[in-house]
Image (cartoon, rainbow, N blue to C red):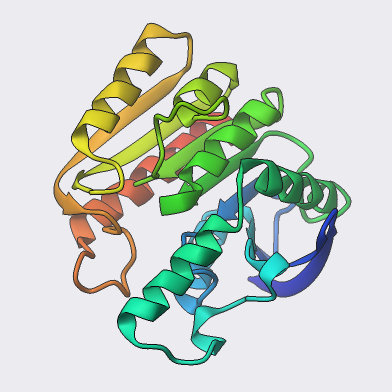
Amino acid sequence: MIEQTIDIPTRHGATTTFIVHPERHGPHPVVLFFMDAPAIREELRDMARRMAAAGYYVMLPNLYYRRGVLELADLPKLPEAEARARMFDLMGSISNPLVMSDGDALLDFADRDPAASKGKIATVGYCMSGQYAINFAARYPDRVGAAASIYGVQLVTDQADSPHLAAQKAKGELYFACAEHDSYAPLEMVQALDASLKAGSAKAEVEFYPGVHHGFAFPQRASVYDKPAAERHWERLFALWRRTLG
């Protein structure tokens, strides 16, 4: 495997991006992996490595670079409530337009790297970034072959860039993994998303994961990690990418 961490120039500075891909048999299809609210950490790098080991050129960008933050573990220690408030403040500092702009820079970089395929790409986002994965598919409908939201939040909102609306602009195959116990994406929101997608023309699946909680795919989140559900989500992702990226 080849790993590198590169500061990729953007319209607003530079995003420190972890890139990993197989050493042989390239170029490899690109996967844009958007982080969750707790930011870049080794847990996410390991997940990127697992994606890359399956044959993909994976880019994991730091979305908090505008605030000068890479890893929350590097910040001064705070009491739990204050640390959580700080994380939500960072989460609120980014938006679909900002992340779409960052995605443009990432794709431009990948298109200039001989190790990356110039064909269809995939996007995947966890938690806060599920919406970004879907919106990027709408932004590049002829380029994004697959987009996945894993226990994504704000799936149905009254904003123009709500995922349930953005999905109708995408041409690629979309996948939404939703946990049964998720205060950030409650059952009524998941049902509204599913109904909207079925009423439209999106090529999409909403899969309900019974008995599990928000964050079930993160192995270091012991209180909610569910290995069978996590492995199911890997199976779904890899099958999706085989179908759509070749």
